[in-house]
Image (tube, rainbow, N blue to C red; front, side):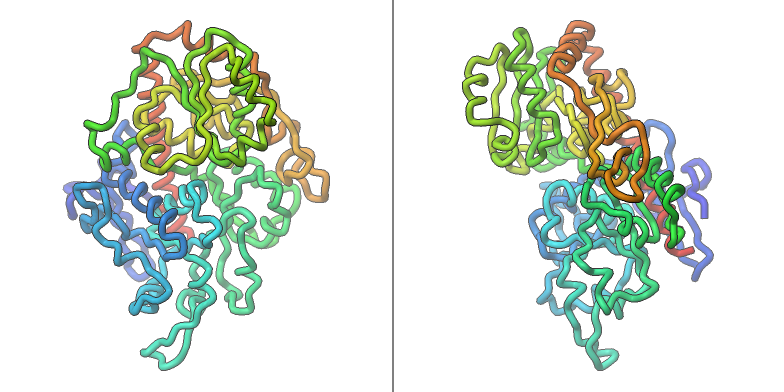
Length: 477
């Protein structure tokens, strides 16, 4: 059941790529894994596999109520067109499809619950990574609520009849009452992917599940200690899986063509900051730095209107008008293609988050080969692990008494820890980090930092792929 390295298999070329083989005893099942998954060297995740993840993500956010299976846009079977689109749209399953029951009864090792309300950029990033590397599928709510007529059995069945023992991944507290349904099978396992800073997560969420999938080491550490302190009635296993994100820079190159993508310029320092709908990206501290300090490079901020209005009072516009350094606020959500192009072309990414569940926008910056400035705290510094691949801003820990694992929870069963899950820092410290970076690095050194960050993205993706293989083995054993 162990994962073999590429050097352990002679002539493993049995499809169109080198493969390693992991043999399972139950029923003679054989999984064929690409050789790059087991490589410990600088081997990169192939472009086709990175494109696959981007196509799954695009399908997730645009086909919000469809079943999205791993087969969509997969390089297995050559389902990618030259224009970086998928040639098998028929794999996306809707509630009125004629072959619905035949498709749903092919249960994967693990299913993924992703209802309509979670089909945005962030949760789709989380979900499609599981779908791809578990050979799984994203299930909307209607799949669990609908009865289907089975011609073979001559009666109506539902999803729980079809896949009664298939574990299901739930994201944070978004369970939507599914495990409380009378139809939920008694022995059907629950897997939880927590963003441990979410204040909605309660002891009952952790006590009800059979496995916890931790994207970050701080999650693994705190969840493990929490179970030790508060009990683990279902003997839940905690996995440190790492995670991955779609490579939006490569997606832009494949979809638009290299000719339409300007090369990164590491000689001319200017920063982009994509806050989107989040108010925890350090946007206010960042903009304050530029407003109050002279001599800073160009800063372009992309932020949703609702987040901007929450962080900045109307009177702040007067300060922006008199900013001592050039800062431009772009309000409203970027078009996905514009975001991909921006990520591909930008060389310097400002990501001073105060809190993250994982940090997809940091990871996408890494994948692009850009230089990332982020905060020196978990989990941000799990992505930028040293000054060789980015810039880390000094921070101080801050507690939130509403966070169960935050160190100073104001209810029962909270984890005790001297460090909180929020960070704080002042604009002056951020400005100092930026100035020190610019003054102490050459163009070549900055490009090398970006290259090392990109290399770490590939290493982490391979780690995640191996973790998903181990999770499949866990479910079968």
